[in-house]
Amino acid sequence: MDTLSFKTISANKATVTKEWVVVDATDQVMGRLCSKVAKLLRGKYKPNFTPHVDCGDNVIIVNADKVILTGNKWDGRIYLKYTGYPGGQREYTPAMLKALGEDRLFRKVVKGMLPKNRLGDKLLKNLYVYAGDGHKHEAQTPKVIDINSLK
Image: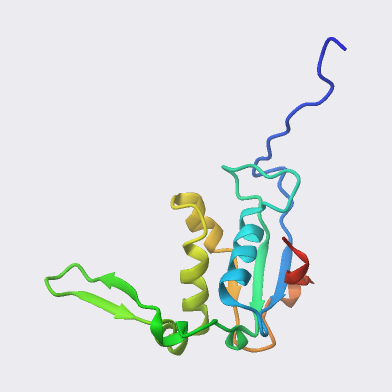
């Protein structure tokens, strides 16, 4: 065999097939769920994954209010942010973020698992989080997947 019969195919914006996926967060552990959601957003479960292209799916998380955190993390874990002014360091917990809105906590956790560049910002815009059972993306005909079946 003188030549290789296989060629590496690099996906681009025109050749990517993006799907809509619904994930149910009922009784799921937050970190384990979000790591799988980050992989779905990135496109790591697809055979044509390309690191520098948005080839992931659009993910809809429903029942976000029923997610669990193990241990004492609801009040024990502390996130810090700085306003830019002297004495402007603020601290908040996951319980405070959940009180502000269900999507705040999920976006913070998933954002930490995505690339820290412009691609990561684009990927985060493909995440939709809803506290209840319904969502407003029925026109896209999303498919419901079992998140526990993914590695």
